[in-house]
Length: 467
Ligand code: AMP
Ligand code: ZN
Image (tube, rainbow, N blue to C red; front, side, top):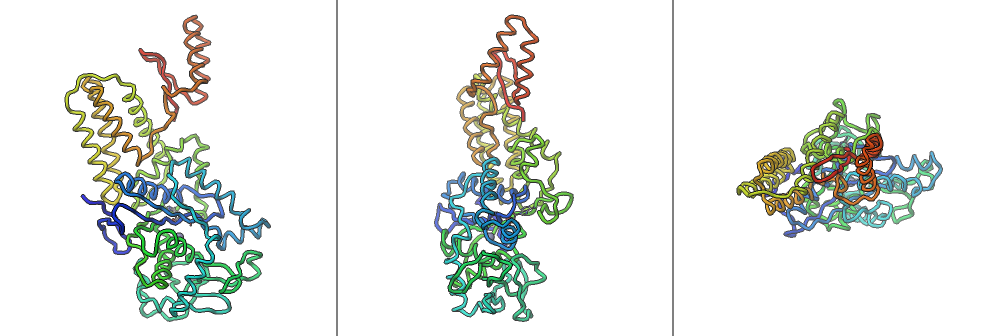
């Protein structure tokens, strides 16, 4: 089966063909750095991580650009409330964002451009739109005249025939019901404090949508392959990006638009405005490992709503224990006789995994294939029917799949060298030799407190981390 994605533009699954064979250029809308991201936001970033990692798994060279929105209404409000500069206000949120990406095992994009560093590029687009009669000015504010762009509404599937020209909206975010001319550039007023740029358009600041048109085309070209975001980005943000880019340049902006559904809590979108959100730290403080959060966010196909629950996190943790135990035990396995079955299982795993993800990143059957494999290989091992060579190939297959999932925990278990843990284990062995069992038990308890579980096996004491 060829690689297929559901394209929001056509509302159909389409075979994916990049403009340049073997290379993918994609733009993923990033965070507005006025607050800490919540796990709903991270659902979008994990979906994009899966997309990126799977494209690489398939052999594509990926160039991903994710913007940082470091200027908007909410940020200006924050700088005024705290009486700090724009960059002083946004920098702790930027820093935390990148830390959270690392904690969740999200691979870095190639570029993270910031809106405030691209004002001249944005001004250029407005000038082109003015020259083409697609934009107009009122009192230093510049608006896009949507009625002059006949295909306006093609992404969100809204019909603007019959719409009266001239209704305007200044806010960056608004509902479909208020479809109207949107702000490209906003003239400075005193509520903006000292946040403004002096440009050919006058003193002011850009609207939100303009930055993504400017930065995507600057780094990826005027037409590129994939643009993503959450479904809430379809309208007005992405609709307006299309109008700006295609209006200014007269050519197709993006070939494939992919949008992930929301993460919901008790039936409602997790969002800052509803106050029903958890940050990553909120969850880690409850004792869950980051990889369990990654697993929950990854394991529901991106076009389905993801209902967030703590039971879901518990189940994810169990699955991860199973997977990491399997990998560790397979690594330590000595090998038996081959029954010739293992290579069929390996082939089946790799084929089923890839076929599932080829089908619009259908993750559930991909994970199903992995857990079937674990069961089948464990059976072969138990029956002594897995040879040392087959074991190596099985490990390689699991590692290959893990380049997409990133579920293996590096320091999950021995024999990784850890001098402190190793020394404590040796001290415990000594205590046992002396028959000082209370001392041995005390060391075991201390290790458990550090999150280390001991396992006494015929070949010595092993350890693993408690998830
Ligand atoms: P924001 O910082 O609000 O602009 O959001 C950043 C990204 O997170 C966007 O792609 C949003 O579509 C996405 N997003 C926000 N809330 C959720 C949610 N509850 N579930 C999934 N994605 C979300
Ligand atoms: Zn954007």
